[in-house]
Length: 232
Image (tube, rainbow, N blue to C red; front, side):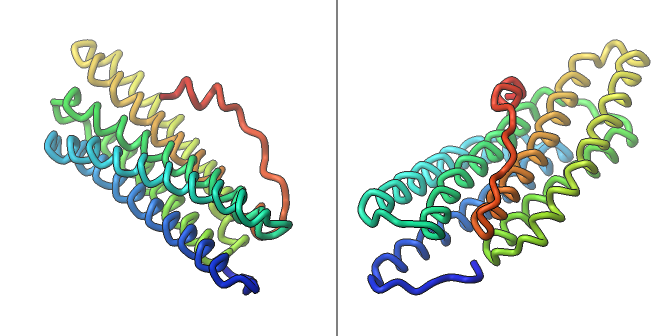
C-alpha cells in the first residue's frame, strides 16, 4: 500500500508485508472462486462447481491464518495509530473476503440444481450482474494493494449498479416462474444466485470502506450483520 513507513524493527516490516501479501492472495483466490462458480453455472459444469466448493476450504484456512497473524503482531508489537489501523483492517478484510468466497461456494452448490438451459434474458442479466460484481471485487483488491482511496470510492458507487441488476433479475425470474410453473424450482435457485451476487457487491463495498479507513482513518459505515447472515 502507498504511504508505508519503515520501522526501526525490520521484522515488523516483514510481518506487515507478509500480511498484505496474504490478503492479496486471498483476494485473488476469492475472485477466482467467483469466476469459476459462474462459469460452472453457465456451462452446467458440476465438476468445476465441485472444485469451487473444495477450494473454499483452503480460502477459509488462509483467512484464519491472516487473522491469527494479525492478532499475534498486535500482541507482540503493541502498534499505534497507522500500524494498528493496518492490522485491524487486515483482520476485517480477510473476514469479508472469506465471506465473499462463501457466496461463490453457495453459487457453485446450486449448479447441479440448475439443469435446464434458461432463457437468454436471464442469462444476460446474470452475466451482467456477475461482471459488475466481479469488477468491484477485483478493483477493491487493487485499491487495497495500492492504498487507492479514489478507486475504493468508485467501487462503493458501483454497488448501485449491482443492486439495480438484482432487482431487474428478480422481476424477470418472477415473470419466468409465472410463465413456466414447471420450472419454479430451478428459478428459485437462480433467485438465490442473484442474491449471492448482490451480496458479493455488498462485501466489495465493505472492503472498500475498510481500505479508506486504513488509509485515512475515516470510520466505515455500520452494516446489518443479521441481514448478511440471512442471505446465506
